[in-house]
Length: 69
Image 1: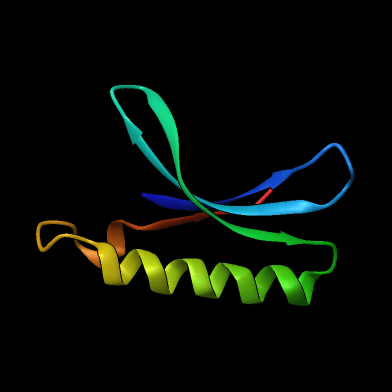
Image 2: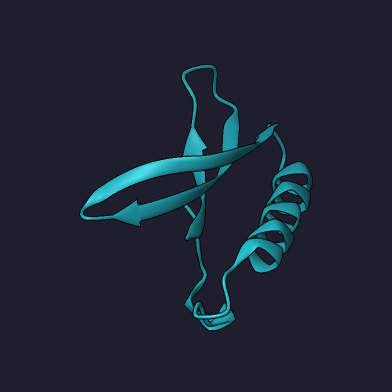
């Protein structure tokens, strides 16, 4: 699983948790949109906390990746 920023048509950026399996990406959860860097950082922190809490024991926390545009 990883956290990504996705640019929307409106110019805002969505923060999403993505799972990739068998070459296909799946949105696990969207944490909202933001227009300024402070909002995006807050949303990413919230997303990373959620990923860490929901990781199974076989997933090492260092395997979680944060992708920036």
